[in-house]
Image 1 (cartoon, rainbow, N blue to C red):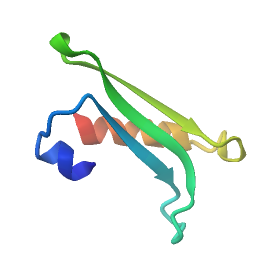
Image 2 (image 1 turned 90 degrees about the vertical axis):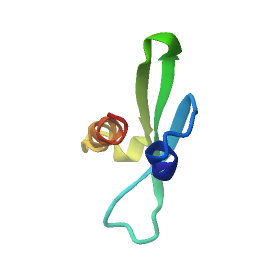
Image 3 (image 1 turned 45 degrees about the vertical axis):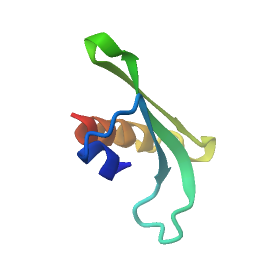
Image 4 (image 1 turned 120 degrees about the vertical axis):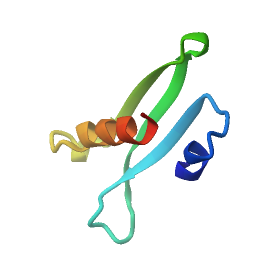
Length: 72
């Protein structure tokens, strides 16, 4: 996905699997997404979903911050 963004490949959405950086097995704990909301205004929306057993640990906030850094 990062390669596609860097190449400015045209797409209306990106989906990322959220994993813990320290987890070598890369077990998924959620999903983070960015998508085109109103294309002619170039507006975007972001969202994330974290599995309940990982709630209240800041993982969703961290995923949202990373989405903004990657995209903008």
